[in-house]
Length: 174
Image 1: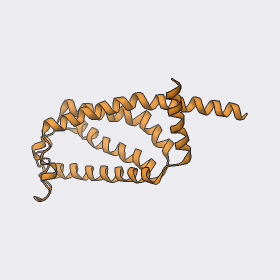
Image 2: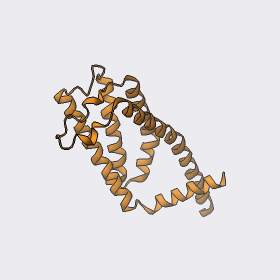
Image 3: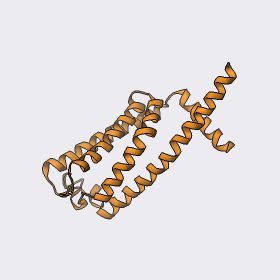
Image 4: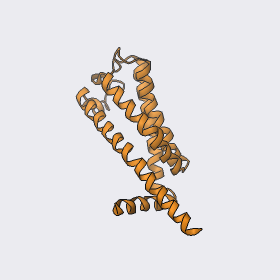
C-alpha cells in the first residue's frame, strides 16, 4: 500500500510542477484528432455512404459525437488551457463513466458498416483505413471499454491518495 501511496504522491508532485510542453502538445493533438473525427463522421452522414446503418439513430449519434466532444473538452482543458486539475476532475467524474457508456452502447447497437469506412478518402489514401473490418472495429471498441473501466477504478483511487497527502501536508504546515 505504501508503494501505491508513493506512486500517487509522485503524480501529485508532477501535477504541481505544471504541465510539461510534451503533454500539452499531446492534448492539443487529441483536440485536433477529435475535431477531424467529427468532421469525418459528419461527412459520412451527409454523403450517405453506407457507413452508418439504419440502426444509427439520435441516441447513437449523441453517443458517437458526444464521445469526441468529451475528449475535446478534456484534452482542451489540459493541452490548450493548461488546466490539469480541471481536466482530471472532468475525466473522473464525467468522462470515464460517459465514455464507457458511449462505447458500450455503440458496441451493442453497432450501427456501422466498416466496409464503407474508407469511402470518403481519396483513392490514394483509402488503403489507410480499408483494412478495418466490423470485427476489428468491435475488438477496438472492447479494448476501449476495458481501458475506460480501468480508468474508472484508477482515477478516483488516485485522487483519494492525492487528497490524503494534501491533507497531511496542510496539517504539518499548520
